[in-house]
Amino acid sequence: MKTDEWLLLHSQYENYEKWSLIIKLMSVFVTLWSLSFTIKGAFVAFLLLVLWLQDGIWKTFQQRLEARLVLLESAPGNTNALYSDFQTNRPGTINLVKEYLSSSLRPTVAYPHAALLLFVLVI
Image 1 (tube, helix red, strand yellow):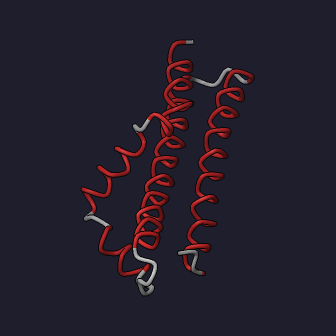
Image 2: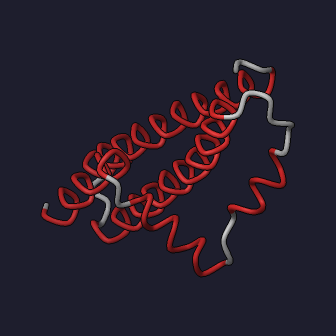
């Protein structure tokens, strides 16, 4: 079950989690920065939306790795077909954008982005 591919993918999966946390921390930094310099709410809201969508994109990539990890775990004798699986699972442009937006709305991705965005727009 723990092939070289599984170990590599697991490591990458964890790296995506770290980057997601960094994006969230960046959103907090942008919010605090905007308060320090009284930056207009619309500009900060735009930056927060960009970071939120980027977080959703990272989580979408992570989901694809997870799907492959599950496949490897369910079929330990399976041969390496990582890139073809990735391409097979990648939808067209419109569906890809829908997938990114869907990932962005998951509670674990939306926090803290939605709260910071609301905060910036209210003050």
